[in-house]
Length: 222
Ligand SMILES: Nc1ncnc2c1ncn2[C@@H]1O[C@H](COP(=O)(O)OP(=O)(O)O)[C@@H](O)[C@H]1O
Ligand SMILES: [Mg+2]
Image 1: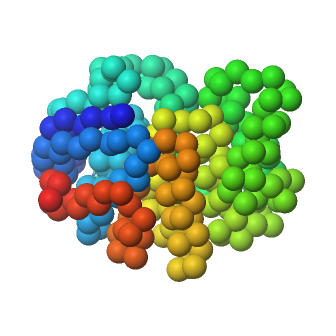
Image 2: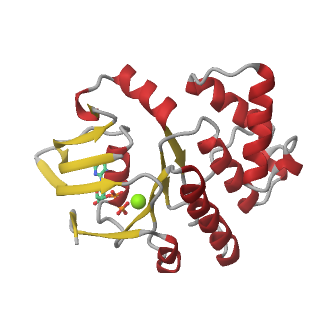
């Protein structure tokens, strides 16, 4: 699905340069949940954002769908992310003035996936049902619990049928029960749809849901 090859990343501030990734090679497989774990500052989020085409590399390649993301320009990357990737973060980042269904509708439009109005409505209902939120389709974010918001964020990440979902600490702001519910959902999605999930977590309790656990240590994979 995706191959990261010898990824290096350095940040420089003035004369000081810090090498955060020191040559990471990783394959992300379709239909599998890959968990990236490791202590804070070990480079997990940096690696995820490079895989997702949100950040440039210092060297190395990110192969996806026959292309190397590191050789694409900003517009090509934007189109690729919008069409093929889904994103879930610690905070749900919902648009405050849109209902649950409207959040998904907006994302569907952005993705460039062409559907008739009727097909789009059916697809939105299907995905809302999938995350257990169809009964809340007309709800606004400020009336939702943290767990409900995260379900909508997951639905929004899935609405355009992405090949890979990138999730950075998706359960970090949830209590234990809701965290397990969200993890179960992410895991089931990989099995049902063949979507790959690359998830960052430092919560050991959540690693049981992963098909593969990759530990980052000092910018390298252990
Ligand atoms: N934009 C940036 N500029 C400078 N340093 C950064 C930047 N992003 C991350 N870092 C540094 O890279 C290291 C790894 O960060 P990060 O990937 O966020 O780690 P993790 O997600 O594992 O906590 C940290 O030391 C952090 O300070
Ligand atoms: Mg992080």
